[in-house]
Length: 195
Image 1: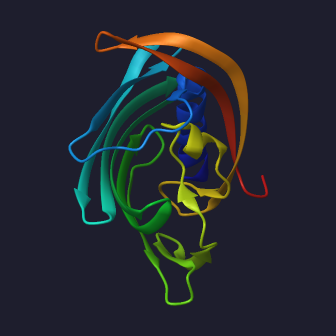
Image 2: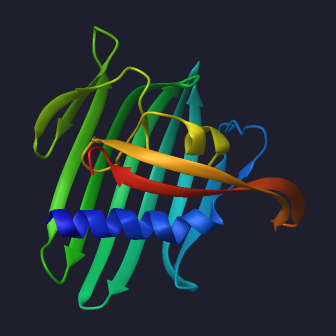
C-alpha cells in the first residue's frame, strides 16, 4: 500500500514538476476563477486537474478535482481525488479530501480532514489516526509560486509533512487562452518527511 501511494505521489510530482509555471510575483484567485491542467507522464497526457474558487466574505474556498492514470512497468494505478480547502488570506482554515486509488496491487478509498484547533495548530483526522500539523502548514499543491516555495507542506491524502525542494529555472513567455504571460518555471522534488 505504501508503495502505491508513494509511487502515485512521486509520479505525480515528477509528471508535474517540469511543467509547473507560476505567474510572478503571486496569483490570488478571484471568486469564480478556474484553473485547469493536463498532467503528463513521458510526454503523454496522464490526467486532469481542475481548481474552482468561490469567495465568502474574507474566505476563499478552493475545490479541486483530479484524475490521474499511471503505468510503470507492471504497476497500473488510477487515482481520483476531490479536495476542498478554505482559506483566510494565506491561512488555511480547513481542508478535506477523498482519494480513491485503484491499482494492480491494491485498491484504497481514503478520507482526510484537517481543521484549525483552538491552539492554532492544524488537527488532522487521517486514515491512520489523528495528529497535529504546524499552524502554518499548507496542502501540497504546485499551482503558484507561493505554494512551490512554502514550507511546511503536507501531502493531500495522509496529512503528513512533505519536504519539497524547489529550484527556479528562470522566466519564460507562456500563452494561455490567447494571453501571453511571463511565468517562472519552478522544478520541484517532493519526499515524505524522514525518507
